[in-house]
Length: 71
Image 1 (cartoon, rainbow, N blue to C red):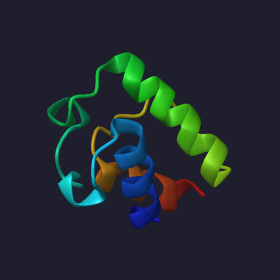
Image 2: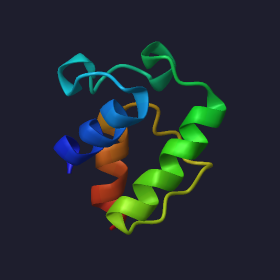
Image 3: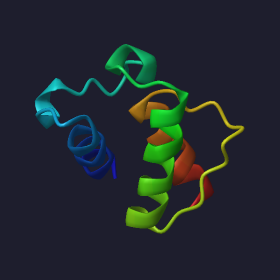
Image 4: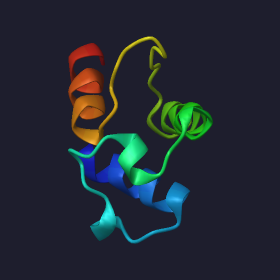
């Protein structure tokens, strides 16, 4: 799961996956609120999950935990 999310984010940012720090807030990765919304839609499409926008998962690690708890 984590590797797939890293891949999605790296593709979205057009950077190597090795540059994605899973514990860094999305804002530190250069994402604004519009980027996060677009990324959430892409993750939902690719993984077949539904993510609540009101939930605070601002890192890859928190997003993985949320998906695993709610899948």
